[in-house]
Image 1 (tube, rainbow, N blue to C red):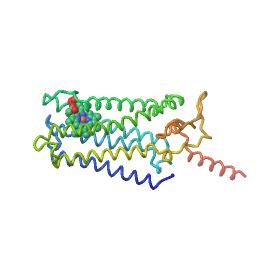
Image 2 (tube, helix red, strand yellow; image 1 turned 120 degrees about the vertical axis):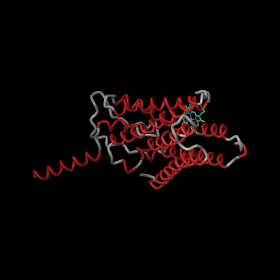
Image 3 (cartoon, rainbow, N blue to C red; image 1 turned 45 degrees about the horizontal axis):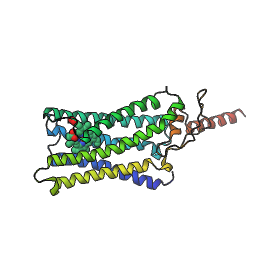
Image 4 (cartoon, rainbow, N blue to C red; image 1 turned 135 degrees about the vertical axis):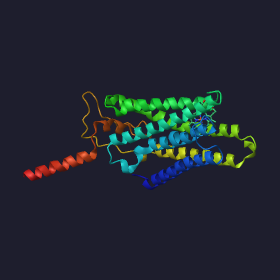
Length: 282
Ligand code: HEM
């Protein structure tokens, strides 16, 4: 892989930032707020930022770069799809629990729902994310969609993935600001009390995490290399001409070819067996 050390550096920094963000969110809610609980009170609300950061930001961020980890390139594409989809599903579950927590808290305290820009954008993203996962499972994991459809929908899949991830980070930053404005009355947010500085720092770490993930995701040289073309058997009427590079983010050709579940290692092994067989008959 070209620039392997640099990739490792970005990955390590992203992992550290992601873990740190989840940890700092926990420190925030336990040290400055009411901790975690499920009683309709502020402790229930606190699940909202913690689970959004863990699921929608950290786990989603890892899920979208997982194909780029060079040590997974020897694994079959199908296995990588399961890991990619599995991480997204775990993230979605955390997102749903986090939303239930905030709606439940609002209802218990008779606070209106869905009045802020944060809530509009946030709910839209959660719905888009669920649709993106469903669409991904139907088109790319189940074996029914024809290769041509998989190929033509890949740019949309990639675009929505990047759009959702980037916008989730912006939404979290809106959420931090709102929460600090609502909760810091004395001393006021504008007087920069320690809690405000702490949460602003947390927001900044999340922003840098997002920037690193998007950098890894958009380097063409860090894409998972295509499987070997020569042995692929496309269904009648389909072609495996996946030479287009319409995106630098994810390799469409991989998505298509791998469904034929033909991996270069298997091909090499088979060739060796053939050769050994030929030799033994000589
Ligand atoms: C409320 C989504 C992160 C703070 C909401 C609501 C949604 C939402 C849909 C509306 C709940 C209702 O109306 O009952 C999201 C998404 C996030 C996210 C998708 C993904 C990152 C955060 C973070 C914080 C936060 C990190 C930081 C504390 C708030 C606050 C409310 C709220 C204070 C209540 C006020 C309001 O409705 O705007 N969120 N949220 N959110 N969220 Fe978030």
